[in-house]
Length: 357
Image (cartoon, rainbow, N blue to C red):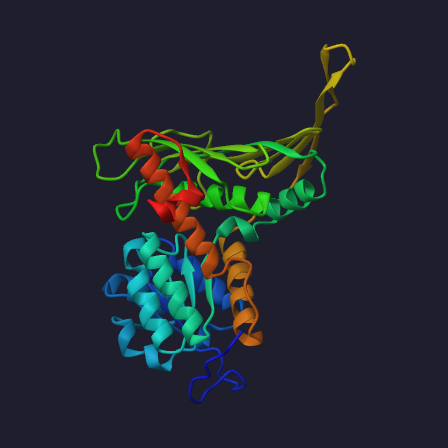
């Protein structure tokens, strides 16, 4: 990958990387803590127009300014943690300034914006990494290894539930805010995006964005996934990320030989052998085993974010591609636009046809 080297201090300077965190709202403090864990707090500048946010950043040990543009020329890495409809403008400016960019999910609010970022990053030889939280969660990583190792057999069905009773986001609906996590996880487990999508979106709060999403994904090999998300349907457990929220965050992968379920609220992965066995004469019987449970300790948010940012720093330092680069942001933007189109038109949308419509 071609690289653009900024002026001194550069990648080999003791001062590298100089980090600019844009946005210190609900999730910004987790990023400040993560940068501190990585030992970069003394080279971190937080930009946020809200005085209270800047005060909180300074209390955590970071420098703080009101306008990111004032310090952009001095940054090596830019970490974007702002409302999704502002991601594109900030990322494009950062890329133009020669910075590598980390963008919290979703990369952008539209496919056109995602394409612009990917093209700009390619022309500039810069790195873009999308912050898909669960790709760095130990349980999701363990789930992926077991699925890839064939413990459940060829995948037939993925059931992903990200439902909550919690504070709604004002900048986006539950597709871009919540479902995107498990949409990406399903694609990551399958190692490719789906070929078709069918979706229902509902707005019981009367807002301009959806509060309930029910999404079906299909792959050419016959695998199917159901992803559901909401901010109005209570789960069984207090949400560790959103104060006052009650959530359910669970992914079950069913294959020809069994099922593996990761419950991110109880910190358990359950496995069970299960298949239909033919007697050769048209009769089938279930053959299942006793469930097995692997328990993980609770994983705090800052640990997962620190893992994401550590990959970002390593890729920026070495000139290597991250696991979730700009192309993954473009693919997700295309999928989210297909979801919106399916719900709007009341039909299944084939992703290959999106560019032709």
